[in-house]
Image 1 (spheres, protein in one colour):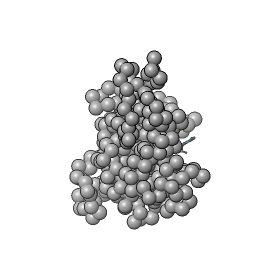
Image 2 (cartoon, protein in one colour):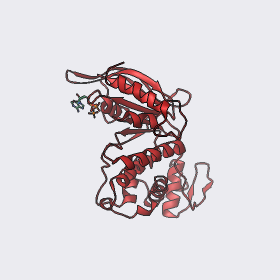
Image 3 (tube, protein in one colour):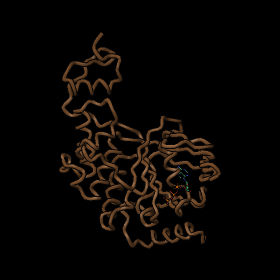
Length: 285
Ligand SMILES: Nc1ncnc2c1ncn2[C@@H]1O[C@H](COP(=O)(O)OP(=O)(O)OP(=O)(O)O)[C@@H](O)[C@H]1O
């Protein structure tokens, strides 16, 4: 039996790439040596939440969330401090379990698919003893051949416009650049869903605007589903197709943002939406 013929085809391509050996698909055809490894093809993953609850002891943080997010949509979640935004995000990416209800990942046709999500936090959480490229490759997990991981890291660093820093140490980067590395690490496995927990919250105003533009571009190019938690309603309406307001663990407003990209600061229609959102967050509507 040909070596590796029991492996998943993608794994065989990795083998061929890493070991420069002959590898075969299950039908016996040889895997051609590849100069350029493929970017992992992934479809966006939509979400279906039904009656999602989360309690910490007596503290009922999420109280029956029902939500449908179509594959490829960009959703922002805003709300007062402590209303449960980060808790909801942690449930979506599997960092915590709901105490009630169901969370399903779905495809375009509404069929359930395997959970496939990554998260970016406010702090980049990079490994200081790894280069930028190696930090990004961490996002592919263990057991991936080094040469393949290196190439994928290079590709995604190009997407976040940081190729020239691939060999640099994280300590040598600016705050915005570190956050771009964290974004690249989350995207390198081409997740179906990207969760963003205040990822721009620690950046200065100008860097924040350029990161918003970068996020929009990367989302449009790669096509994943995005769920962004932010305190900033201006940021929410600039990035998202739809903004959800959470209050005491319940959805109190679900607002579409139909404006096409690129969106401009000072756009009066966006300002109107910001006003509605702010009123809802403050409980004035
Ligand atoms: N691991 C935990 N154990 C106990 N309580 C928790 C835990 N995580 C969150 N909470 C509680 O859940 C509530 C919601 O917290 P969460 O971090 O989701 O709010 P948030 O809306 O993201 O707030 P912020 O905008 O300030 O980040 C808070 O009362 C918090 O104390």
